[in-house]
Length: 152
View 1 (cartoon, one colour):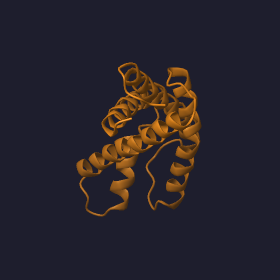
View 2 (spheres, one colour):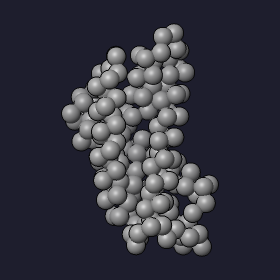
View 3 (cartoon, helix red, strand yellow):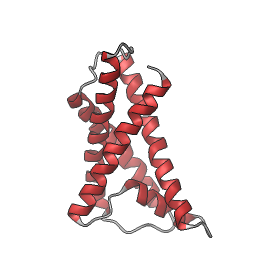
View 4 (cartoon, one colour):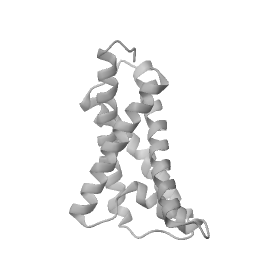
């Protein structure tokens, strides 16, 4: 698959994931907003950084990591017989939520000044959020496949 399609798929998936996280945060009155948490981690780690700059860095980091996950998904689709469907994307997304939880957990353990959130519930939320990411990323891949792009 072309790099541009992987990037577009990652934007679709990351945007869907972000909307899900913001909706859950609002509903549960918790801060499960990945870009905001990344921004707070940045702000707390870098002296004298402006809040706006740190929050922008959080969003950029969130979308960059989404691009990496989408690139891995593209390779998985190319090397396996997994079809790019909503359900398969949710399954692969849920599985990829495991290394995401490990990454966040490591970050929280080594970071000098953590933002406030319910960390244990956040980890469960991350798996669900990655299911959303995977489902929408795979939907984009499926759409591109039907337009003649090769995925597998």
